[in-house]
Length: 327
Ligand SMILES: [Mn+2]
Image 1 (cartoon, rainbow, N blue to C red):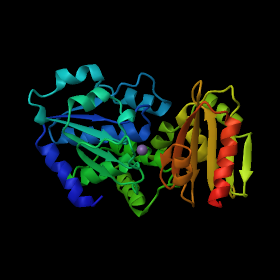
Image 2 (image 1 turned 90 degrees about the vertical axis):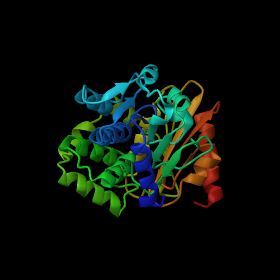
Image 3 (image 1 turned 180 degrees about the vertical axis):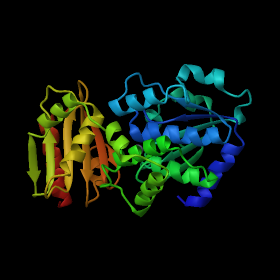
Image 4 (image 1 turned 90 degrees about the horizontal axis):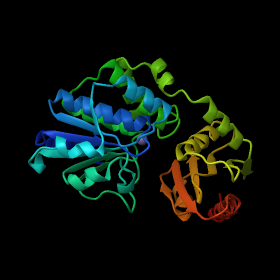
């Protein structure tokens, strides 16, 4: 995105709106929730009526901690409460979508139906199901939605409290896997900036703490790995266990911590008929492979969902595709 100019357009849209609704992707993670809160913090400073829409009924541990800590500080509503909080004149309402740009992934489809004046601010690649109406600002080079929120705060010269700075740093830490992936000079600069405003790495570590049971499940998956060409790790779950997509992604992240591994591919069931594939790469572009599997992603991250195929068949497919790509 042509940074400054594009961001200025957000400023204009915010200026002409009174009631502003923010939402992230389904299955909130720390980048989504923290960017939502960071945005809401900025808007409150600008004296806007601001609402965070959350329809998720279950939350992962870090998100649960944050939601508990911020109770009462921000207006958190569900889809059912949008209409009663909207301005009578629809052009005074604004919807800000963070950390996703896909229609099917947003917290509230209803919000999309109700509001056409929209901003999408995201760091994921666009796809077939991306939201098209509105001001769409995508920077796939950015580490996280939280990094983009810091850029927005810069437009208004708004300084974060140490708590909000900590949340934003947690989002960046999560999405970069501890500053290993998608990390650029600006990411470090943003982390530095947040530290200056009192972001606590100790607190970030607390928010990112993992559940021991899910860790044990991950360990099981890590015992069944094929190594291809010496640097590609393919981990397969047993056909009986069902994982959450974000757990597969985390295992893929973990595999990159091991010697020589440059690409990690994790395959596990995420539903009765659905198999999820999560891939990570340090060096090479993983996107073509994920696209061939019917999914998508960017250079370092990718995912696909495959239905009605056995895990062993998918492994064979992937190995064949890797061979064709000459990797
Ligand atoms: Mn993110």
